[in-house]
Image 1 (tube, rainbow, N blue to C red):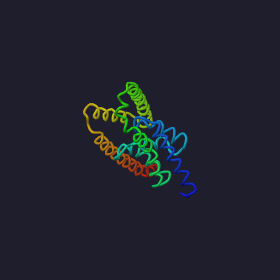
Image 2: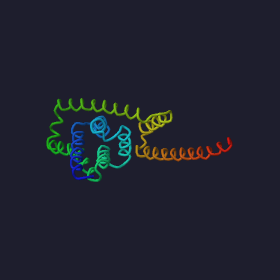
Image 3: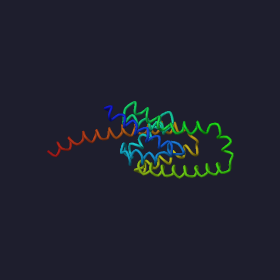
Image 4: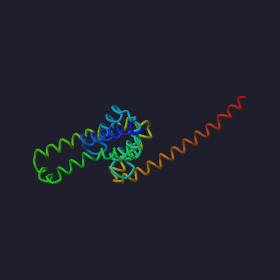
Length: 201
């Protein structure tokens, strides 16, 4: 990328992720509605499917999901430097706010008004997460098998307390096996097609 185009892109990356980190409570999943508005509707850097893929990869890799997503998007837009700048943008608000509140957080949290405000924030975050779940479902659940797999994963995590890491590994394995199965099926259909044409001739 040319220097003339690189600097504005880096600035836009930092600003976009700084705003996201500044005005979002509840972590990576709760950031998804704002990321959709910022990255898809305003900037047109991604599609809905791209964002879901980045979230899936970010959830499957070590580290904080929001930071992982920022790094992926930054790298896509401006290479390694873009990934670094986008990552700095998403973490800067938290560093600033935590630095300011670190010395007073224990005393402030004891005030009834602060506790009430935190409870309100918790409710808002729960609503945001519900919205994210619905959006994820609309984009990813496309058939009965998807529904069954989702319910099975939920049951294993919620009721049997199976580690989400194991669920992710199992999902990766099942996805890979399914791709291999579909490729073999497509190859058989291609081989069968010439045979049918020969018979007709």
